[in-house]
Image (tube, rainbow, N blue to C red; front, side, top):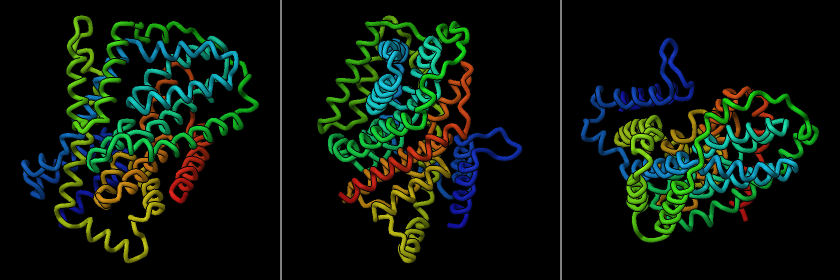
Length: 406
């Protein structure tokens, strides 16, 4: 047990720090080293390590990345963002529509892809109108995180929770949708209040050509093909068919194209994230095999921390998600949930996703918006994000708390 616990603690401390001094390792590299250490130290054999990996979850995640890649290469995200840009003459209404659009798309597609595709177009439109881009870009990050909480396929941690918990797609939406909608509305009103004196501020417009050249052209046929795939996939999710099989079948059909090369589509698959999932599956599975988590849960319950209590579970989820990121936090907490109590799984999904808005490193979507904005000359500082992220997270968790007790 001791080697497994030591490797687990070292890995999660490294993941929390985000790096190892003296080494060019990121969180995925650290997690992969932890998984390797579990095997090399003899905690698990290679076959046992492979058995800990939840293949259905990985297949679902992979398939959704392929579907999102189809829409991205077809220019659908670019087209959608440009279609709403004429509303910039009414800045607050444009903020509302852009947040609603990104939340909706994030609920049915990966929120990271939505942020990656929307950020350059938003910046281009805002520069053309010479408006302050900060409230809109922060609104994009916030709304994509909140919107992704509403469905099983909105983000990677929800996919994991839905697959491991064998949760129904429709019931997940019915439970997680209301607090997500409430949080989205509250976030919009908060942004309007925080930037009430800055919406009309004129900004100096830089050269738009670098942004224009980076955007994929709109291809109506490929976009319609991708949207048809999404519609079919969502319909199949409401049937008894396994979600991962439905999704991979649709992804396979989208790969059959005379115009889009499969290499171009597969190039957009986030292999980095898939590697992180595999490594964390091995680490957590190896730890669970030693019985250490059961001992820890019994200890926590003995001191009054019962993770079956939805409020306590949500609070622990928020703290862990901002220490080690939401995917590692969710993997760690899954073993404490009761398979016969779906509300625990729903609460974990919503709280871990809402937690992503607190600080910049809480969500990959935040980092994507910040990094993409920096490429086009727009700086979003830690302080600027925290000014919005902290109150948005508190309001979102208040919405969840009210939902838990209504």
